[in-house]
Structures are given as structure tokens and as C-alpha cells.
Length: 251
Ligand code: F6R
Image 1 (cartoon, rainbow, N blue to C red):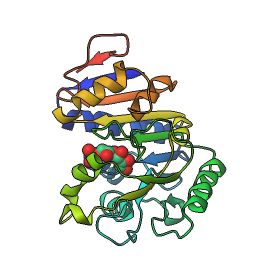
Image 2 (cartoon, rainbow, N blue to C red):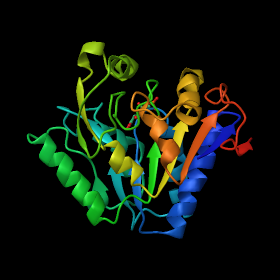
Image 3 (cartoon, protein in one colour):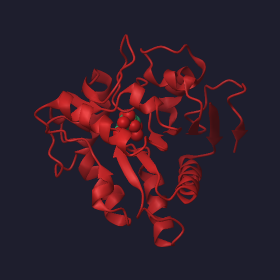
């Protein structure tokens, strides 16, 4: 595990975008795993800029998103499908047929999850997975639990997640209580992982994920077992980290 602490969210997002761009140029037909939420928005803006400048192209890229709320249609303005079109897909040269999003309206949710995992496998697996980090340690929507989840499946959202995400909805009652998320096993199969976390309210979680015990009550801690994971954090999110071999660079 590598942890890179940047002076602020802006420099961290630019560095993350450069890392993604480098991988895209190394393997133009790569499979890219994507996250939603507030954290990666600036990273996506930089990827749009790079595309406009001709530095990268999405024309042969395949994408898979991490999760989707249950019950929201793709055109609902808080669905992750809508988010991705608004913040990335509509602004780059990514062919629609290479975009993979989870159907939150699927009637057979376990069938939808299994089919999604099969599609990831058929595509050759995720080359680079971008992750955010929940305050409760979730990655994707894999909430604290007493076991690590496997494949893409139905999840009951934690009260903390519902409270945190209420800021995007008109009221907390509008926040769906369930989601479909790639499982921990699916995420751990990604060849390379970039996790981004910003702000002081993520500091305790970052510290626990990087330096704490590996346990399903803090799902992101499992990333300590992944062979190629980089945490990109700003100073505020990295404030509680103690010096150690994982903390390779500070900028
Ligand atoms: C989103 C996702 C979540 C978020 C996390 C952090 O697809 O999988 O794990 O990354 O909830 O959200 P923000 O970035 O809004 O703090």
C-alpha cells in the first residue's frame, strides 16, 4: 500500500487524474472502475480537460461503476447513472456500449449482481479501480459488517451513509435505504486501485484503513491486502497518519 499526502484536494485530484491518464495511455483498451460521490468530481473534470486537449481518449475504454441505489431510475438526478453522465460520460469520447452501470431498478437483484460480475470477467477484469471512502470505512457501498462481501449484491445502507448522503437529496427521507454494490471480492480483484479521500472528516477512517486492524467492520482495511493500492489524500484526511513504510511521499 502506498499513501500519498497532498497539500490540498486540488493538487491531489490533478495527480490522481494524471495517474489515471498514464494508465489509459499505457493500455488504451483498459477496463476502468469508477466511483461516484463528491470526492472524484474534480478528478473527472481533469480527465475531461485531458480528453479535450487530446492527451487521452476513452474510445476503447470500458467502464464499470461501483454501485447504484435501489429503486432510482437512471434519469433520477440522484442516481449514479445520472451522476456519471453528468460528470464524465457526456463530455468524453466513451462509446455508450462500453459503459456498464448497475440497474438499480432490476427486479431480480441477485441475478443483476451475478450478471454484472460476469460482465466484468468477460471484459478481462478491472485494470484500474477508482474508490472513494465512506466515513464509516465503506468502499463501494460495502458497509461495516461482520464479514467481507463477495460479489455484486444488495446492501442495506448504514445510518451513517444515509445521513452523509442526505446532503444530495431534498430530505433524508428521500435517500434510498438499499443499494447494489460491487462486493469486496470484486473490488479486490481489480489489478490496480486508487482510493481518494479528502477532508478532516475522513481522517480517522483513513488512519484506521491504513494502520488499523484488517476487519470487516472497517471494510477499507481489507485494501492492506491488495498488492497494488494507492491512497491519495489531502493533508486534512492524512492528518492522523503516523510515519511508516506505507507513507512513501508527501507533497
Ligand atoms: C460511490 C461510492 C462510495 C463513496 C463514498 C464517499 O460510488 O462507492 O463509497 O465513494 O461514500 O463519498 P463522498 O465522495 O461523497 O464523500
